[in-house]
Structures are given as structure tokens and as C-alpha cells.
Image (cartoon, rainbow, N blue to C red):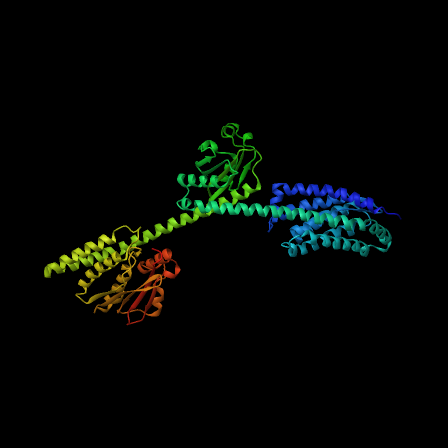
Length: 565
């Protein structure tokens, strides 16, 4: 039997040209391209690939060339591609679709060809995980497909019944040269197209990511204050200055357009609400129109804007606004703008959440300081006034000095808590407090300062006084005999270490461990607040360190960085 292998091969190549052209167009379709170029696939992605590559397998069967009692076909191209791109599950799924279709056509190899399609999809999928990150994958796909198609031919012969064997052998002889050449070449060509598309996509994503980070760095200072008209204005201006391809940029909230700027410096208002913006605000996904005039001719013509894309801004999964890009030419939005607006909207959302968290932390810290002041002031005030009343009768001069100290204490205690204060001022605050408490102890309380002079050092307000008060209330007062508190400072390289030590009753190891734990049943927040404020301002290594033992007093150490001034 004379077989024209050249004719069969040329016929298959013509069919493959059609398939490859179809596949190439698929890689340009956004919905398909975005799914197959992922590193990880969702169930929906896999189902779509099963359907597409299964259809390619069916198409390959129909463009086959009739030879003896079967056909030389390209069915395996779609099935093997499914496995190489989507993995075993996708390969088996596409193999089932293409194989079932082949089985319905009948013939001596119908059943065996159907099983072979499933097996080829499975084996290609098993190899997929090893080839996912290999460069020049087409060079591996070529011999792999050659081997799989060779096994396909062998499977047909092995599974053929004695009655069918001669016909099957004649069929294999007729189709094997063409299928071992054209199908591997087709798979390798598609993998090359696919890898090239992925490389282009990665370049676009990399460029968009770099640009998004540049813009985020410029806008960070504004967005930390929240999403408002001023921060929105600064943000859209920064985007427009950085991205030359855009004609205009807008930031909108759920209620209104916060800022709109185009290349000619024109502003905008409520009339700029376009369908993509509504898609972002209402449904939380990006929307795009490549020809705006189809939807709103008046506004788009007035502003000379044709293409619009919008992406949502979110606060903890709740859409609070949208970022909008405009271009002057229809059909001009590319994958670069898509990746840029996705990345930038995510970064802006993150910046807004961080800014909101910082504002809440600042408010919480201020509220805790005020609570600490309120907690201390009434009790301290009543005790101080009682002491002053006592000295008014016995020693009026001491009463006068105590009133001055009390006035100084409250002047410092009720001052602004937002700004740092000089270390000397904080020590004066402590001294005023100690002078009043020493009068209550009838001279049994003494204070020693051993602090080196550090010019220009400022500290958070109300940071040392709670430690000293804690030493008086819980260290010295319970032992009734008074005692001494020493404040020492040590300058070590780039930090000033401060140790506040008393010779009071001390505490056991368990109590010492629980002092800085914030628990619901805790009534006082003094040392906990000081510790948390220090860590929040300077870093985790700058918290309080407490050492104590029963009957041996307590030592509290902390530090201030000198290079932070």
C-alpha cells in the first residue's frame, strides 16, 4: 500500500495553522488571557480551560485527514496543551471531552483513541508541575509530545483485538510519521506563543508595579490623613505627573467626585460619573469603557475623553471610593493601565487603612493619657489639699510652698499631650509631685537625681511621673517608714538609659511579670500605658524593664534614643 505521507503532513499542517491562529487570537482575548497567564488557577479558571482545550481537541479531530480505517489528526494537541498549562485535572478534563467525541464517531480505534486522549492529558499534566518555571519550555514540550504520540500509537496496537490488529497496524503505518512531526511541532509552537505572552505580561506587570510604588511613595504623606478633597487632589496630581499616557485622573467617594484633573488643568464634578465608576462603587470590581461616547456623548465630547477605567478603593473589604483613569483616544486602554490601576488602587486602599489605624492609635493613646490623668488627679488632689490644710495651721510657709508646687504640678499635668517636652520639664513635674508627697510622709520620703545633662533631648510628656508615682504608692507607702527614690541616667552610645529605683517593699516574681500585662480586670493603666507608648514611639526594644524582689525594692529602667532628636 502506497502512502503519501507528504500529502498527509501538509494537510495536517494546514489544519494546525488554522488552530494556531485561533489559539493566538485567544491569547489576545482579555478574559481568556487573564486566566491562562496566572501562576495559580481557580476552579472557574480550570473549568474554562477544560472547555476551551476540549473544543480544540474536537476541532483537531475534524480537521484530520482520512487514512485507511482512521484519521491522521491533531486531537492530541488540545489535550496535551491542556495538561501542560492547567495540570492533571485540566488535562484529564479536556481528554474526556475530546475522547468522548472521538468515541461517538465510531471506527475500529474509537474506544482506544478515546482512552488514549485521556491518558495523554493526564501524563502531560503530571509533567506540568516540573516544567512550570523552566525557561524555553517549548524545547521540552516538543520531545514530550513526540513521546506521548508514540505511546498513543503503541497503545492502539497493544489494545487492538486479533481481528482488528492488521487494520490497526495499517492505520498506524499511515498516520504515525505525520502525527509524530506535526503534533509535537504544534504543541511546541503554542507553548512558545504562550510563554511569550506570559513574558510580555510579566514585563507589563513589573513596569506597572514599579510605577505604582513610585506614586504610592509620593502620595503617602497625603493619604495618611484619610480620603478627603485635599488628599484626593494631591493624589490625582501626583498620578497625572507620573503617568504620561493618561489624559485625566479622578478620585471619587461614594457620594461625590473628590478630585478630577486633566492635562489642561480642568476640574470636574458630579457629571463625571461613568458606568465603570458605578461598577467599582457598587460591585467592588474594576470596570472599563473603551468608547465613552457610546454612553455619554455630551460629557466625553466636552472633555475630549474616550476611554475610562475605574478600580475600587476599599476599607476592610468595604468600598469607600474609586480611582479613575481617562485617556483621550478610544480603544487605548491597554493591559498596562489595567495592571497599574489594580496595583495602585490596592496600595492606596492599604495606605488609607494604615492612616486610619495610625489615627485611631493616636486617639487611643491620647484617651489613655487623659484617663490616666483623670485617674491620678482626684485622689492626688484630695490628699494634697488635706496635707496643705494641715500645714496651714502648723507651718504656713510650708503650706505656701506646697500650694506653689501643686499649681506647678497641675500646670504641667493639664498641658498639651501632643508635643514632646524637654527632659528637664518632665523632671520638674516629678519634683513637684515628690515635694507634695514628701510633706505627707513628714520628711520620710527623699528623692535623688543623678541625670547627666543632655542638651536638646525631648521626651513624651507624662512618661516618667507615672513610674515615680507607682514607686511611691506601691513601694514606699505600704511600709510606712518612707524611703528613697533614685533617678539615674546613663549615656550609652546613641541612647540615654534611665533607671528609677526605690527601696520599698518590692514584689514577687509573678506579680512583677503581670505588671505590664494589659488585662480586662486591671483598674490602673499607668505603667502599661507608659510601656506601650514607648514601644509605639521608639520601637519594641524601648519598652519598660522591671526588676523587683520582696523586701528589696523595685527598679524600672527605660531608654530614650538620642539620634531621634
